[in-house]
Amino acid sequence: MAVNFDLHDLIAFRAAAELSNFRKAAEAVHISQPAFSRRIDKLEQALGVRLFERTTRRVTLTAVGRDFARGVGAMLDDLDAMLLTVRGVGTARMGEVSVACVPSTVYYFLSDVILRYRERYPKLRVKVFDASANEVLAAVARGEADFGVNFIGSSEPGIEFRPLLEERFVAACRRDHPLAKLRKATWRDLAAHDFMSVAKSSGNRLLLDQALAHVQGRPQPIYEAQHVTTLLGLVEAGLGVAAVPSLAMPGPKHPLLVSVPLSDPVVTRRIGLIRRQGRRLSPEAQQLYDFFVAMKKSSRLRAAAVKRA
Image: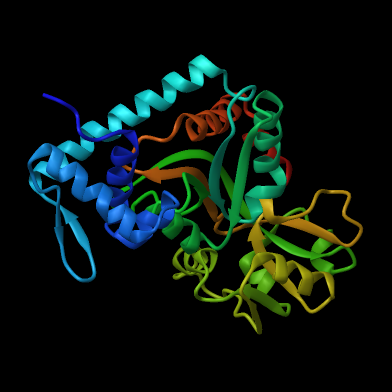
């Protein structure tokens, strides 16, 4: 039987299958929506089956379409992997990887991973989407990022969470603050001072509220900020103290800020890689993902977290 469709038609089909929207899929493959619709029609006519059920707002795969999508996805991934092998990653091929991450991971290990990745594959571009934990999770779930680095996602349906490290929350204060003289502090110690926190919409705030729900004398914030980096700016300005993840703190040589380990209870969060279940990463994205895994095995991530705890 003659094949009356080509690779571009299959790429368009996969985009529509993943995004469930012809307009967004057309944008993803950089053609107009009418041209995109013609490609799908051409593919369906060549196969003699309906691959999509169409409504005014959404398109969904038929049963045949779902089976075809699995085969096409595997075939295109294998083709991409073969091209990487033949051409040589980083020497003859331009590609792009998108990573979503919470900001505290950027300074202390994401930048190191990307640096090593770029040294090996200098022609591959890396897009970093730094955002709140909820936004990182959403970007990965919607396919807007290849994968993410986050502290939420371990219990989310459709998301695979691979732990990288565990870090504890510490008290952030100025070097001239009374808490800076302590080897460790309790949450009651924080309550004795002007306490600042991230807003209730923050993933860190939710984690802390759950961990401290039954702690008597827990600190109550008098100031709130949307981001940990803003919170540290307020601490540096002398407006009070805060509880932040250890990786969010600047290094020990910072002229104004210092961290003090918190106990009673010790509150920790797990940082991990998140990706959509059942979706294979592109070869470029898989290479970067593997760099994170390799760094974990070499204990560099653990050392970074302990150093700042």
